[in-house]
Length: 294
Image 1: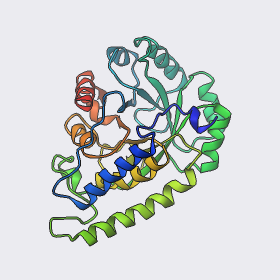
Image 2: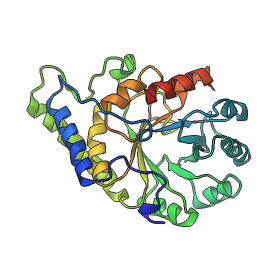
Image 3: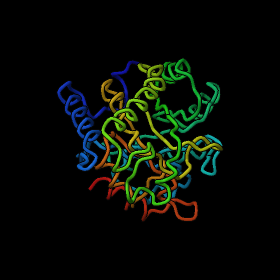
Image 4: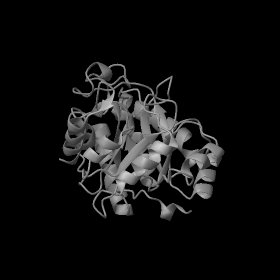
């Protein structure tokens, strides 16, 4: 499988579009008082609803305009087995032709035998790797299973923002109204260095990256946000290489509009933010999708 065969189509294709994106990011970096508004057209923004377990809930989502449905095989309260996953994947075929969501299997440090065992019964479209999988393993998954791979990068929770769930966007990287432009640039450069260290080894062996808030128990799915200001450094790296970037971690119907219009990205991923009492809530799912597409 080559990179051109990827399921994911990056938003920025041409050098001109990439340059425009970089200009937007530079303007945002140097003008905190006048943030850039990112215009994600309906067709370009990819939406993933993760952690589905119920056939009936999934049927109630038809025909919502979502792009990916995630099934969790890693240790989690949303974990399902391959037989249930196969039933859920069958439901996806009931979406209107041309708008069928793709199935994404979520794994944490799986073995190749485990992936083969599951995909033999549940024909997943995409493999999401949420652990410490090496670049060599990611490439092996692509070559052996002939499926695109999303590699998750865990980002530390934003302690300040989690008190208000980003209703008042602030920065964990020590940025306030009294910071000088030099301090802002230094913080950005520090983040950019970390991004290169994390992402460079995976260039050419994964089809997309997903940023999620680190959870010490499960790796992700914490329901907490991270400092969204870090997105820009990651997106500069991914967009320059034509690799889509998806964002997860603490998303919900109340903050998704702030995210999609305030930061550069290609897709969003939600799980606990569209649940009530630990169960997927169709009204919250509809709200989330509507506000993300608005």
